[in-house]
Length: 246
Length: 246
DNA sequence: GGACGGTATTCTGTAGGCAGTCGACGAAAA
DNA sequence: TTTTCGTCGACTGCCTACAGAATACCGTCC
Image (tube, rainbow over all chains, first blue to last red):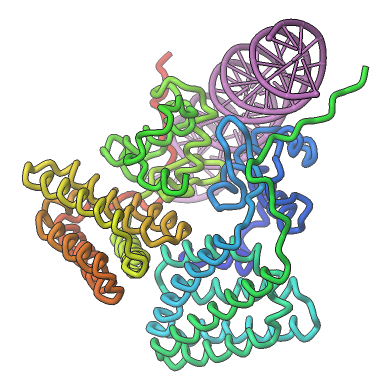
């Protein structure tokens, strides 16, 4: 029970629960956002999403509220939900926080180094390297998330792990385009990190993780500066359906 | 807009918004929890809360879900909401995370030291000292929260500030009983912290904040060991209304 | 031609209601 | 007496419906 729900995907056991509609809706909307079908700043009309997903408004409302708590959408009271517009500044700050949390996690993981944990880390690492070699970016990103999640789990601090996972989910939104650019380098750093954890070298593990996350941040910032997104409307306006003829 | 919703209570300006029912319900339930009217592990029946607060079930549901995201209640699918049972271990970890976040905040605040910010910090500090002298624990705790929130806001990293505020809210649940014990000592440390921030001494500010939060943690742990709470039922059971006669 | 106010429309926020599900209690069997 | 099964009650999850709020459209007036 302790770590079963940390990995999320790792614990596929238990029961393939039918899951509540709310959870399904959450995942569906997340998918729509990361896939770009819902653009940043777009007004999310509850009834529309409800119709699209074939459910009622209530699960959609609840999903939007949870997504708001996780930073995916912004909830303007009385106005509705809008897909969050990721700022350059915010991405920078988010990645900085991630660096902070994960650095500490790595330090703690090295402190209570755990043979079985290290083994699982190595497994994930080889999966990730395989994914990069076969040019499967999605799999690489997913494995990357799992690996980082596992490191935080190994820190032994559940609160820290949960918080880091929350931040990581948001980072993942930005991460995909960077993954290809970073490519194999990232996984070499992972390997070094695991070595440090296995050796129980807190200082080195922390250092590597800090540099690793910092590299990702720099990569992201460079990428973004090369491809400036079009300036979104500063005031998100409620979209209006074209009037019906007749 | 930038910092207005950081303090919560500080920004009483803006609009005396009628606020959505959901938000009111959230605050009401939080209040019921911290005041102890809702005991840890207790089953929260939606219809009951709805009746108590004079609203329908929907706002209550939404409030419970948000509170679940913030760690106040645990949501068991198909079973309902239960007031979170704070573990000793969890409190320890929570305070450790707070230490991490606020240490970094203090460092950053010292980095971009800001005259006006320092002035506001000193104001809060004197308020807090006055509260302690007049033995007003609630005011002291509130002012303490505000001060810490302001430090995180001065860090300039909004994501960090938001996260720290989230953690701080949970800490506050545990903090009240410790406040009296720590008393004036805590505020002397605050003064030293502000001095360091004003001087722009990152290292010293971080050090003071780390020790400060560590003192709180130790205080809390000592207090808890002296007064072990009764072991809550490990399996939260759905409360059952006594059967109607006839 | 531009600005302003009225109106219509759309969406959110909330309420109430129904079916599914989970747990508890009690009876029957071993 | 202990275990197992059936039944009942209550609560959650979801859907539908209604009232209020906010905004865009459009005609009128200056």
